[in-house]
Length: 306
Image (tube, rainbow, N blue to C red; front, side):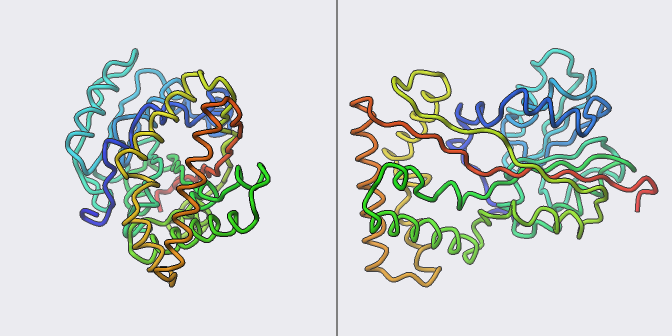
């Protein structure tokens, strides 16, 4: 946590994030929101540019692109990557706090973020700042998940695993999500609150959709997307990071009123399930589709700028 927003390590910004969206679905969203009219874009919590790159084919020609991130290296990489794209004029990466954006009012046609509000200490303040920097009639666009759903052991359930194991894995998922919120680390289910958050920030014409993306694992697991996802999972497992960070999981589990003994049982079930899945993959027996749950919230600043 830094200045009210949790930082994303570069390890969370790998190639797997290139496959978060179906291209034609983004086109559908673009037509619904008339993104071609957007000529100036602010990407809040921009990371190294994945979200801006996904949007670029659908927004106006020669757009002015600005990315804001707390981490200077991310802001610099954003500027480098976006300026390499055809038709972009002078993209900028800015190091700043999302709760205090360094821009005057009414500067942008589109202000957007992807998986940022979930990490903010005060998402309401972040949204107020995003709304402030929008021009009258401008578009606010936020993508936030319900990661609790992604943590749930649906593949285990579908494969006929022992119900006791499924319940242990479910308890681990829910307690971790609750504990992360109580510890101020993240609000994994903030996507559920997007309509109310937008309304509180003063947005009008509020609309919310869910992504149509499913993440498929099917032998021989050789598509670029499957290779990228397998690589990041292996990296997390080997390094004890991400969902394999035992101490982080333990702290959140206990913060959600779980016991030490119960955590050990749940964590053991989680590791066993992971190892079984890896053995199944080696034998080309593992297959699943994980839909996750991503919300896309959109709203507009009123024409009078109020």
